[in-house]
Amino acid sequence: MTLTLTSNDFKDGETLPDAQVQSKGDTSPHLAWSGAPEGTKSFAITVFDPDAPTGSGFWHWTVANIPADVTEIPAGGPVPAGAVEGRTDYGEPGFGGAAPPPGHGPHRYVFTVFAVDTDRLEVTPEDSGAKYGFNLHFHTLARASITATYENRG
Image 1 (tube, one colour):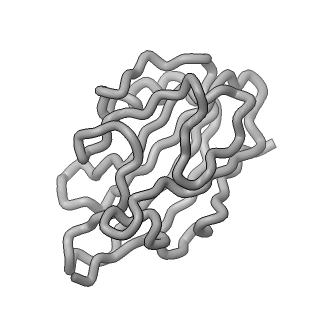
Image 2 (cartoon, rainbow, N blue to C red):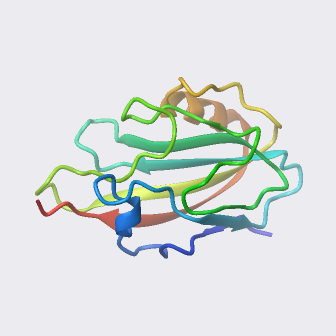
């Protein structure tokens, strides 16, 4: 089996809906996954913009410790009990919608689900996307991504 990620809100390669844009809805999208490998004990989700003009991209959402029996998160959440949302690059935990600078061209928003080999990653709501990524590097069994784009034409 192969881990796959889908959304009822957009398909891979499509434009991100207004609901997921910070100034228009700022709501996390529906996400569903299937095909987790044997040994999966939890899941994690990240949303990353590699095109942000920061030199290091921009973390829009990090979620860890999603129980292994959960395979879907509805639009707007909430995340399942026991899961922890990390600090986005906006400075707060939770989902932060797309907000690229005007005239900067389209940005890619990479939504990734990770099958994790442990029940709990040692992360907190105060931790950055980099810390979530570091922990995931050592505990990922499989991952699947879908990418949407958004451009602020100002």
